[in-house]
Image (spheres, each protein chain N blue to C red):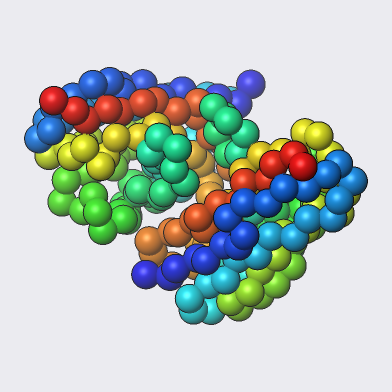
Length: 107
Length: 118
């Protein structure tokens, strides 16, 4: 199984801050990775697909990068509505695996 | 409107069975791989199983192999998860989701809570 190690597990940031979240795959997964945002009590919403493609309707302050084993989600200027938990998901091989999540909290 | 609506969750004793359903509308259900994803209380997301567009192929996470069965009925635009030999660690909100690896944004249901407890 491919392990997805996500870091940090939580962070505190202020509105306007630049935030970076990382996922490391235990083996190469090409660019078969998506980034999801989940708010309490809600289903996840995908922000980025194919590691770096912005999903339609998602604000441009979100961006993704990486390929192979190292991936990054960046929020260029954190907004109040961005406080949530973020997950990466690899779909390169079975079982599909999520990262452990990063909780983004208000500083 | 695109919708996925799960049903069938509830309280079940360890060793018991439950069948979850997911009704799809507003998109071409038969064109997408469908998945079940679960989230234990206060924990992260875990992919459980998926099934190919025509139902000819499916995959499971190891922890549910031999106990859970995913199926679909494209004529009814419905996805199912038959869960047998349930354990306390299966307690979670179960979501159905479409096309997790596809380019269009995946659709998700609102989730249904399964609680395994005596």
